[in-house]
Length: 137
Image (cartoon, rainbow, N blue to C red):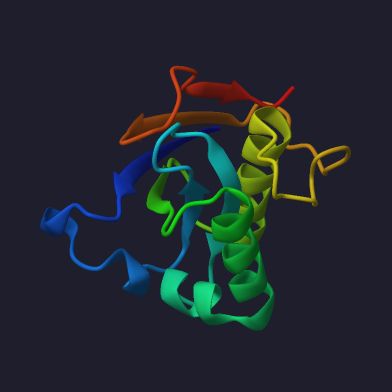
């Protein structure tokens, strides 16, 4: 199965407000280095609602303080798949990317995760890295 993730930077006015997007992935990255610091998913709530949650607000505050930046770059990844969308699939895509990219502020999915053998994730658009393909074996 193949999933294409079309990443969009928060400041791109062509796509509307990313804070309203649901059923997407999102990243916080360092505005100077581009390093992905945190990767998450917004499924039943929007990206903005995830950020306003108590746990995420603490992470965001810690990130800006520790990384010594006023703001972080936020990107959203729209998921295009060949089969029916499900929350479980979004979670599997998220955990595969976390395990392979290893963002410093993620704690889940770093050492163990449920595999979905044959899942190929291809990142396009405003993706952060030269590595764009991730295969779950």
